[in-house]
Length: 242
Image (cartoon, rainbow, N blue to C red):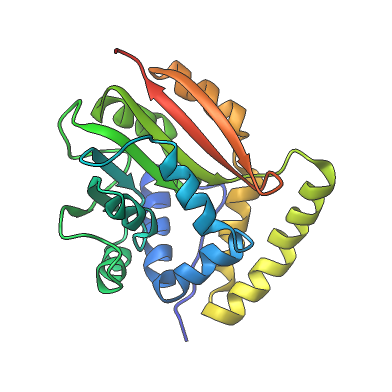
């Protein structure tokens, strides 16, 4: 039987929260790809393609894929000719990405998205899918991404959010709170992990608040593109300086 996961929602220690998230995702590797399909109501691959297309022409571009998981976004980037660096906090996720052929032969790094091991102004674009709501320190993340992006570069965020539409929000809330932990628990044997993930969606800040934070931390513009009745959003954030 899998070891129990313990998470205190009132735990304010970023390091303890990071350790919890790292351990949790290590434990979810066998069912992670299925988890994305369940959380996205089957739409995640379409969102991935849309996300990458919003970078623009990427052939030959230097792109950093943060919180890359098992490499779904990295694979789309590589297939479109980007020179892709993939980073994730979970070593087990990276191993799975390599084993399934999603990650390329380039740089695949175990690391923290809030403390990036790269020089300044070195990437044309940065992507992060289903990752920011699990980061304890959004301020450091935003500043670090802004630092490593070249002037005019783009940060593209894909994230699950609460729909603005009342009826859809009620349905999705019921799905997250009641159905997801049951389905996820049956599939993975870790219902608590799925309950935590559902909670991160239900309690995460609104995309407009994220947009304001990004603008205050050096990005010149932010645009939001809601997806699938508002259960997800793609955020296109441009660094100034061109």
